[in-house]
Amino acid sequence: MKDYFINKVVIVTGSSSGIGLATAQLLAEKGAKIVLAARNKEKLDKIVNELEEKGADVIAVKTDVSSEQDCRNLIEETVNHFKTIDILINNAGISMRALFKDVDLKVIRTLMEVNFFGTVYCTKYALPYLMKNKGFVIGVSSVAGFHGMPGRIGYSASKHAMHGFMSSLRIENLKTDLNVMLVIPGFTASNVRRSALIANGSLQGESPRKEGKMMMPDEVAKAILKGIQKKKKKVLLTFVGKGSAIMKKWYPSYLDKLFYKHLAKEPNSPFE
Image (tube, rainbow, N blue to C red; front, side, top):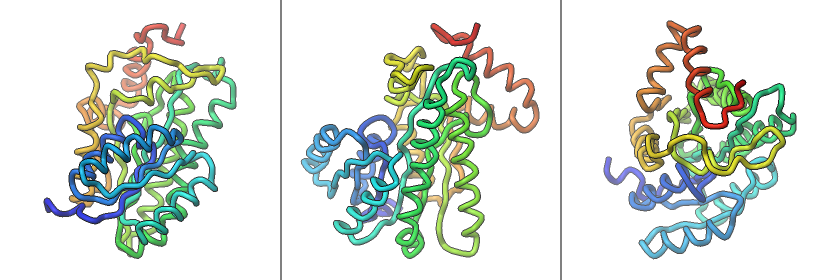
């Protein structure tokens, strides 16, 4: 299986930093043809240069996944250049940190547009090529996608929506050869935390959490590629993630209290 990714055409959204960048770099090492997608074209061009110097076949397409037209353009540019698509990794996402009673509703809308509709738009336009190639649709989610995350209400809602979408898509394709996989990391050190929105919609800035103790993006990237090779439906990572899934099933009320207590301990927590 060491040659599995050679010449596979892979789109990675949110690939200018964090999990997306680490995944693109690992795919380059494995010989894939990579399409980088993110809003910051300057960052993408720099990454393209770095990967090309290492012999990678890679292009960048400036993409705001909250825009349906941008997502359609991403797929068209990919097909124009590489002629097909084998794997779509829906990784682009943003978070938030505020209580619902304080938050401007535009923040909730923004998170839904990026985290949920970004996945829907990209998947919709890539689907014909993925189905033809018996390819993969991947959604990078969070433990917030299967249990409510206090202080992250818009993030949790958008990830719950992603889970419903991906699960339904997988079931619709039980008799086709399309592969659908959810990736659920625990807390991961990434730019998503610094770009999180606060109550008024402005950026949080520095993360309140100690990122040195979190899962690193390259670990998630390795798990994504391993999951693809094994054709997994779900990749659940970290002790926290796996433990949360067990408690969700057997002790949901205790998990409520655990999440509340854990997030209330953050510096400058929005909880009273």
